[in-house]
Length: 506
Ligand SMILES: Cc1cc2nc3c(=O)[nH]c(=O)nc-3n(C[C@H](O)[C@H](O)[C@H](O)COP(=O)(O)OP(=O)(O)OC[C@H]3O[C@@H](n4cnc5c(N)ncnc54)[C@H](O)[C@@H]3O)c2cc1C
Image 1 (tube, protein in one colour):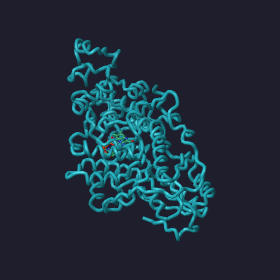
Image 2 (cartoon, rainbow, N blue to C red):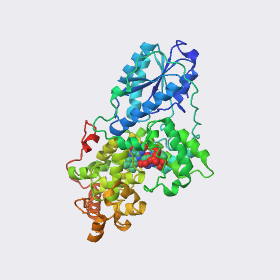
Image 3 (cartoon, rainbow, N blue to C red):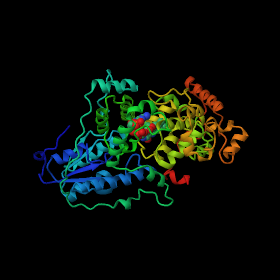
Image 4 (spheres, protein in one colour):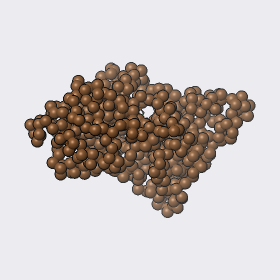
């Protein structure tokens, strides 16, 4: 890791700009530590990038607002100030260097190729102005460019990738401590966070999200501590059950870098006599997603298995509306889509169930689901989202095979056997007995009447018959596999919407 040494720098009192990106924390922040180590004034900066390759929308903007507020408070408590600027990153950094006399800019690396490409051109633009740039690793356990198979190629299978990380690479570095103080920053004008309009205006669709979450580094640390105390020991046994609060819910904190994977890794390892390998393995999936996107940057939009380019996706606006509104007639799918809308988050098992329903039962393109998740998730993360959607759709690396089609009724019965999750999010079904909660269309008239359910009125009948939909999907897949030209139906192209999708739902 490069070190910034005061004597190497052109002007010993010139400040160092620390550009915060998806690392909104002061502890275990290598760029911040190295800036402090230089002994110079430090200018903490966040840029709302107007040229971001995939700008945040919807729920993630809500999170960003509150996360920046928390970071700003934290930096002030350490004796400094967070400067906010908006614009093209290279222009903002150049202008700020001129205004403050800064000669050095530091940041922690991002790993998405679209971002790394941009960081390269920003670096060139800054170096051309005589500025010094240093980048550090802080947001992954293993750098994607370092992990290769014996042939020097990127891994395509998770198990071998993770084995290689654990067995042939040095263990992740210990996290760095939070600084005790930051030196006073040089004077620099800052935007006002409220002027960035990251929060929804009217109607305020974020009330449920605000009830469910507290963004920020302190909250991330508290969440990790609670998880290790309450659920870590039985994570492997309970993690697939959305009716139980058994996973860490650290994903939005990780996505915004309010906690580092190294902090989680080392704290979890020290937490118990029997650390949950399953939990650490999930962190491994996060590494694998980033590894995959780094080496296959087109993964964000294009199927990694080329034959899926011929898949006859359907355009079905009515089914799409039923899906996003949680009105498909399949209780576990509807519960998930409503929970996502209300809280900005979804349990991993339910993410898999709803994604499978969209791409297999409805045959709607995974890119459309990926875009909806991007807009509605507080943990929206390009690598995890695209990799997981491709995994479910069967067109990614090391994917679930396409012919493995989840039956939403059986999945509901297996992972929410008492209907706790469904009753919470689909209250109009709450009065049904457990045996009917995941298949209301099979309930007798008297059971429905007793529960106050009128199918087709208070709750929809299934919008597709799962068995028929399954056969349709398998036959489309056979066509793709055999190379038989399949006519792509309308709607095979992703509908790009310049507007955030969220307000449309209200
Ligand atoms: C269709 C689909 C879309 C998804 N989109 C996203 C997304 O945009 N952002 C996101 O962070 N995760 C995404 N995931 C992965 C996973 O569902 C979430 O990370 C997980 O549910 C977060 O809950 P948790 O923090 O309680 O996880 P835990 O089970 O406590 O796991 C700890 C951490 O490991 C990582 N992790 C867990 N499962 C996975 C996984 N399958 N793939 C990659 N990393 C994982 C997350 O960072 C998580 O916070 C998606 C999964 C699917 C099936």
